[in-house]
Length: 441
Ligand code: SF4
Image 1 (spheres, rainbow, N blue to C red):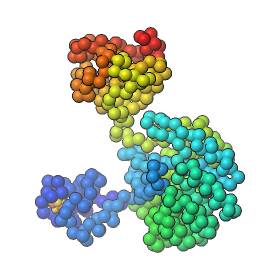
Image 2: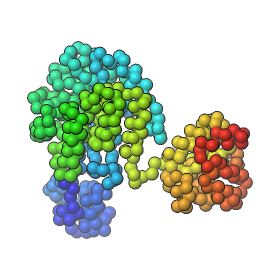
Image 3: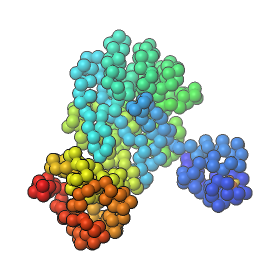
Image 4: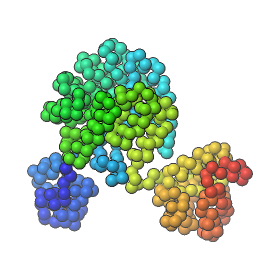
């Protein structure tokens, strides 16, 4: 349960010495309660008080790390049930399940999903390797899956097979998913010895909870919870109940990220896609599908990108010149705002035109063209200021600047504040740029 400022204040030295950077102990306590500063910033807090408060102020949901190198991911660490309350922090990861009989067919499909959207690379993040009873075939499949260079889930309840598979791939920090009421001790040892995350399941939510309690008592808090596959309804209810218990009731036994295997909930790829969308919203940290085509990836990854952005922070591009189609200093200039969606839409059309353009992204607070213009963040004054700060005139020789058509009103003022520049009014919509640039050329 989140601590209140007063609870924290009671355990502080109350000397108002300001060493923590806050004017008073009460101000410091309030900041700690809001998560704005760490308790350790008070150098005079007693060890006892620090221990008491650290335990009580720890986040209700643990953050765990899986994978290694450039395929390392953080999961969990969420603080709110609804994105509009604040933000979700650790995006859902998508996995595709492989088995000995299908691995050769599926691995090329997994590798084929690889594209960029709004600056983010979209790939199948994880490969889930299923154990079907044949240890040799399982180990062979694990080796093949590892060759793709993705983080793995070892989906196995047989301790012997689990141990050998973990030995093969433990450097890549896979998840060992298969601990349950009957095998948790052996699985706890395998996962703890390898320093990897242990996936815990159960015949029902009570069984899962009891096993988590036993694992925690044994010192393992590096866990992820499998919400089960009895039915879509049960899996959904479990996912919601686990998250609510952790965040609303402060039940730390439920304070772990969740795995949802939608491949076990439906055989129909479209229904799996629908379920994956549901669990992206409610509360699948890892969602396993039986396959991934572009038709599935495009809506799913797009949804995830929308959900896992901070609504309090506009998606911004770095303000600077982006040369398009091999533009050099003599290429014509086009300007727009730093809102990422605007950038990617306009950038796509500029590329499509084939015309070399110095695409200038101005610092406009991360808002769209009309919003930033209305807010005074994309005006002749701000553009001129940005041109000076970014030394645009030192970087390009061409003095033709294309404005977005929606802010044609800036043309006259801009020509006055940027002497020597010829300001042209571009089309209202990005889609008109291809024709516009070809005619201009
Ligand atoms: S450093 Fe500690 S004792 Fe000093 S003002 Fe801050 S909270 Fe109070």
